[in-house]
Image (cartoon, rainbow over the protein chains, first blue to last red):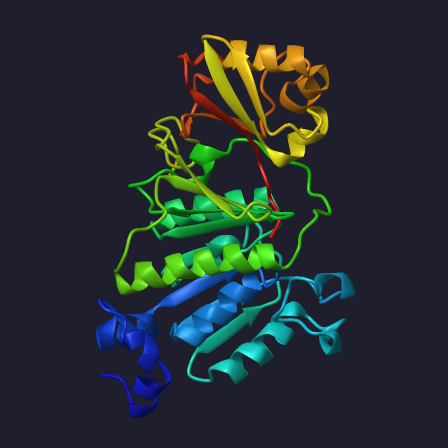
Length: 246
Length: 90
């Protein structure tokens, strides 16, 4: 049962057909893990907080730098030098005090990931490198929780949603790595992709619409074009295939 | 057999900014071979020293992944290829 304040705060989304107070109640019950409080993490965390997800855990081990501010819109000039999780938590709590925001200032590794995601229903990828994405994908498969991937470069972005055991996973799509680099990016690109990921998360929790499963969505901001590539589960996938150690 | 190849933006530096290239070939490998003939400098952006596709290059045939056949995957007249490069920023 929603409170009077909740009914008022979320009035416009409760009005959406198929959403209703029941959908809002599902959001309030949800526990979402966001890996990264940078370019993708900023819009993701902002819109999931505004939408009323019950509990959000954000993990990021970095501090705010001047060169982050063109895209990482949760961090402002006054936050330079602060831990990103502190800067993000302060804004998110002010935006919606009803949401439980938990911030952890650690780098994600194979050793700590299982503990970090324990008790969370969904894992969202807002990272900036492939090795950590593979760690997230793998733990999502092992724990059977959905995984929401996003990545950006310049004006280009990509997104896909993984339902473990049912749909292609990130490792079915990508097998390699690229060297970690200082990549070009304009803030509007992670804004678009982060919002697509947040849309997927909300739809999954509420149980409406179609998900980006078995599809890789490619966004070309220079030409404002969206392309979908069809994906299939790889039976020999290192993470979700028949011989993987799930 | 005419096949259209759509190139990832990061490959356009090798093709004088040409984003779509028409080639002939009956497999993905033959099509990419003809692409390299037209634009020799693109070879290093697609293949390793042993002629294998780089592990961050993906080829889609009519919007479906060519993996695992990749270069051996057959194509037919009118097919459309997309060459994409992995991106990892966030």
